[in-house]
Image (cartoon, rainbow, N blue to C red):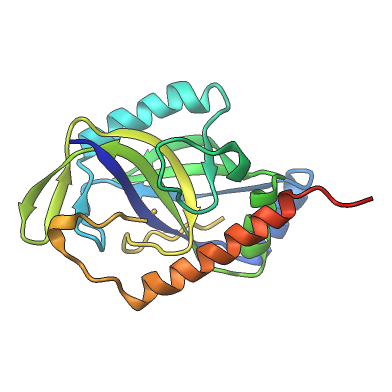
Length: 210
């Protein structure tokens, strides 16, 4: 049975990189780095086979990126639909570098995009995380593999990465219930940060009084 699958990748960028991007792109923040890694087990024990990820990345580039609607959110919702009210960025291009899916990302001038830009300017280390629908199969006690029915939906910016060595230079992995992994202190901190960002986004979206 299909479920919502997410996979974190760390996205590294310095405030200086943000400034240089704004200078080069007429004020726009456009960054690039690793979006996802194929064939490697992340911290939550999930593996995305190269052939499945290749198929989905190719489809994503042909449709969403080509039509300029490769949108993503700031933090993962528990949904298979991209919420336009929380969109923070748009993927401009994707390509392969070894087993890494590389991407070029434009931070948008939306309320969530502005929060994302300020976090990056402040040197906050964030992750970028794929969101998709699919089923998994148990490989061994600590590993599950994504099945052929996987469908890539988008990449979101998140605060808690799970893939080793994949912070972007300008993914939230849902833990399989069978693995019975306890909630860590990092997840608790992540939840607090998510709530704060959600509150701030809502306030930014409210109309100001005359």
